[in-house]
Image (cartoon, rainbow, N blue to C red; front, side, top):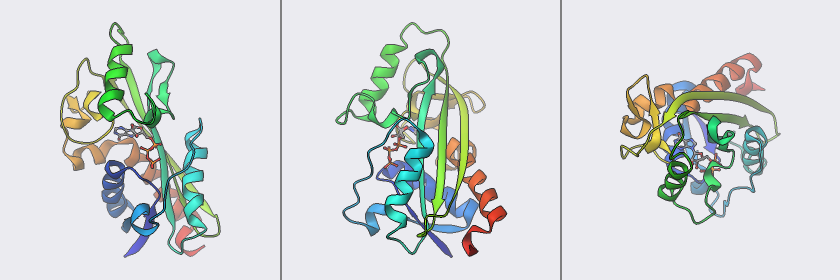
Length: 200
Ligand code: ITT
């Protein structure tokens, strides 16, 4: 089976990517921190694609195995599309997922437009810096209170109308079938075929 190194320090994200990569790319995933013990991530900026490219490139040059990285975020139009690429940094470096959710619910206390979307840009890069990219998004609504224990990050307040529950109430395969991450990796798979990435 092919392998990819996943350039992330986020275990929840890795668990989802691992399943999606197995199904969509027919490849096995290795978490960056299990291979590069001093992996510390990168200093992220304001742009999903640049962040994903950066996360992939810091490892790709050191790896015979292609590196998969993604940058994702939650966009809420009534908050000017915040927190967006800053989703993991909302509330500062010591803020927990719980703190971040509290901050969003507080900001949206009287919001009527509760529309939201998750965004994901994924990059697969080889050791020579050649890459393919994929983009995915999923639409939802910010719930008035959190519900569910599954998933990670903002999932307890990301209500998915088509399932009638939050992402945190959905089993992993159910979320992985419709998520922004799934769509980004599927788009990536199309590009892989087009440019014959594995044999470039
Ligand atoms: P890496 O950079 O190491 O991959 P990270 O958590 O910092 O880990 P990002 O910079 O891509 O990753 O930030 C994405 C944040 O957006 C993530 O930490 C969550 O807060 C949120 N997010 C993205 N996708 C999500 C999902 O499927 N469910 C819940 N929250 C999500």
